[in-house]
Length: 300
Image (cartoon, rainbow, N blue to C red; front, side):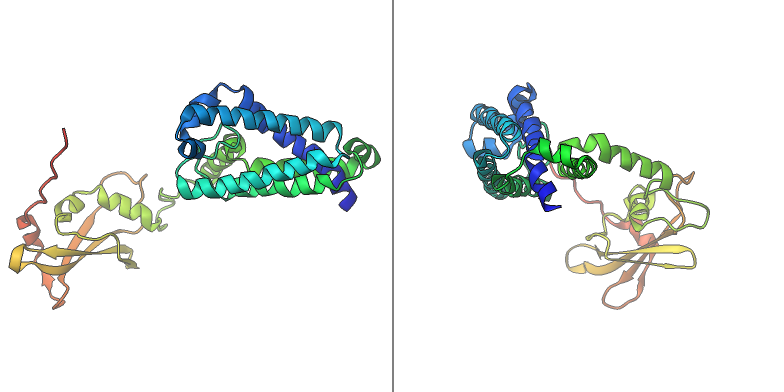
């Protein structure tokens, strides 16, 4: 297994660097996506970031050619390991400087820097170090062990695809759509009597007339929830009254625990106010007397 790995790692790295280098160097989207990368923040220039990305792409293509043509030579593997170490340093700094920006690793992804980018850079570093000490060639390995080579290359390709966020649209999104078709949307109700997730109940509540009526009192997000006799209770904290007469209250909403977004009609929602100090209920009719919150002025 060790000889199989050392023999085929140069070919795997050549495929990865050849793909990412080609995208950076030849894809016209490199210039368009450069401003959204952490590199543009570092260099304070989108134009310089695009030039650096194309330069890195050219280096990656050269290394891919070296790993393919002379895999037994330690120079391409060593240079690849150095490139991987540089990627890790860049990702760490970019994550700290601009966590919302993309890394530009393949110049075709807009997702923020995540653990997958670090893992792929670590693969380049470890793979380059392995290729630097390899003595055989990938073609001799494939010729000598074709079955094992095919399995290894398939597994390596699957790992690299899973670590590439810009390829999610080809495999991850279809899998998510299939899961929704098979198991249904998590915020939709199921058969009669099935309890929907709490997030679905909160979403329905915040779209209801009861929420609009009680929202001037509410001062928190969801604090607690429980179910009893088919009802789902949602607890919020609030403040009733103004000035010296203001007092803290607990706002309790109750709605059918089986109602989801696909349930026809408006959900029935009950509202209750409880004085937080005395535990005494506050008359529900007083909700109509609560002054609405004043809207903030709009700029412009």
